[in-house]
Length: 407
Length: 139
Image (cartoon, one colour):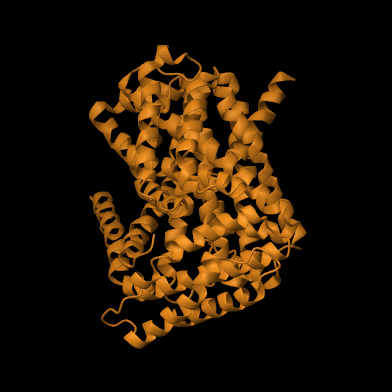
């Protein structure tokens, strides 16, 4: 009974924790600008994240090592600096976007300026990361995040997509001059869904919760079902934006605009549900990002780490959390719109994916860590192909968008 | 060693393809002017729908207020962004767009959230502004 409770909780957590500022921003903008023409990118990214989460859980459960510690152990300190630097750059931007997402959600609920609420969002994340035990951090925001199921209900309330919108699923309408934006969104979708911070967080979580070789079923169910159902939230946002915003020429470039379709579906309660979902998903993601960074650094440098330990016993781990929240606060003070920052950060993550994740693929094929549980050939090929595609699309679209004043 | 030669070819192709895309970039990317004007049009369209939804009881006043603060911030730099550039729009085209912009900005900065004021007029103004900027953004 307890085992199945864990499995259900794991799936629910993964579902609620799938969305964040990046996935909400990319899904909303994708639907508003290209109808259902980017659904394929979300499905592809979901496949990649399902495979990667299953792999990293299997790695930690079988080897009893975290991903970050294994990189350093296997490749040495000098090599470890590559994923470390790429993660620090990309995830600092993403953390700022997540804090901005929390601030905007609170602003939509209270009417107070999100600029004023930004430090409050950082303080809330700090307090939770500082004092809350790991299962609270993992489950509480994700359970509130289940309100994202309202997105699915919204599609039914609006009568589903029209025939015209459905045709964009297999025949995306990309007008001349919009291809760079289309590719930029493909890269942002891949980067926001396949965020490496999730792997550092998940792998550390597996050890914090004492996973072993007997947890492989829980791991598989969480990865495949949790991530699979989680993607439903993202896909629902694309469809909602496609139904309501796309025909009105609204590009959903502000997070508040993405909640408008729920107003059309449910009246005043709809946008409020969106704001609650935005708050919960961004809070969960901000915690995962800041802890993921602290896990990466602490495990890489061999410091004491652990969310379940009192701060005094893992002082440098907790100090790293504070440091990154300060960095995010400083970036946030520049006043960059969180949605645009989330899109940009997600594209940067897509660009850096091969550097962040290539050591992971090597480790997943190392029998000294995994024994008989190493990766099969098709899993390797699938991940390499998706990472290469994310890298190329980001490499092509990012400079074009920046040169033309977008992004 | 055909294997090594094949790998070299793959790496060369992998490096050259993105460069070719970059060189051809001007053909599949909008100009900065077109991008700016399209974004302005979309913001006016979003403001119109938010105001309409507020009066139809589909969003709360607080939600609409936060959205309008975002629209105002998004649109505040428009006069600076719409400067003449070589190969871009003429001065008279920009002046025309700026006139439409100035006419619509009161509806962004002071939207009628109460039923007693003339919010229908603001909806019409915002629609006109959105359509004009959309047309200026080109096909």
